[in-house]
Image 1 (spheres, rainbow, N blue to C red):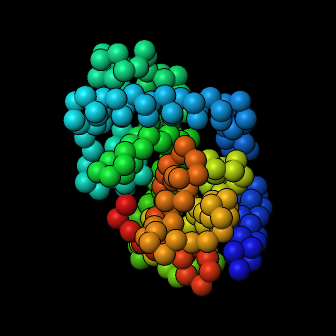
Image 2: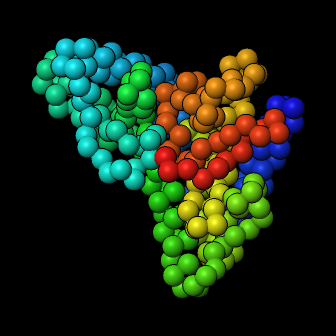
Length: 250
């Protein structure tokens, strides 16, 4: 059943690739250099280095080196690492080159802050392009009260975006987990998300193919299997042998 679910979402991703190629008004690949194998290894090593520094800091200080954020910030984007105390305290020799602070491609964040803090990289290319898409949708909704650019229904209450209604201005999004084109979806309230269903299926397969009934949010498989956080996403539940998105606050 997992194989069928995966095939379904691969087909969905394929449809979205064709759609975005037809309507894309900008360049194609968003960040080819960042997805090269050597850079992935470098980012993984950097995340592990920062993880060790965070653990040492927490053990000595009893707190985490994080910046404050609003209560409405999603959990996989919420707690950005404050590098100042890590560098000043000699837990790190310098701010990592991969970080936004050094002109890199992402924010370093901490997830599971109250249980088992884990350092992840939040990709800013995906983040920014999803913000751009959200602005397009918001502009459309403002110009057409009571209407949203909804395409085909992908899941209950989640739809493809009808790019034609947005004048074909949807940029292509690349999955940080595979480097492949990632489908984009919109809910009935006009909020846009990256659809990580196919990535979740792959992560589950790599974890042995069985879904742990205790896992309340299938995005946990993504963060366990990689050093990236699932930015601009929603909660996923396991329904009828496949990951299905549901609305959430984080």
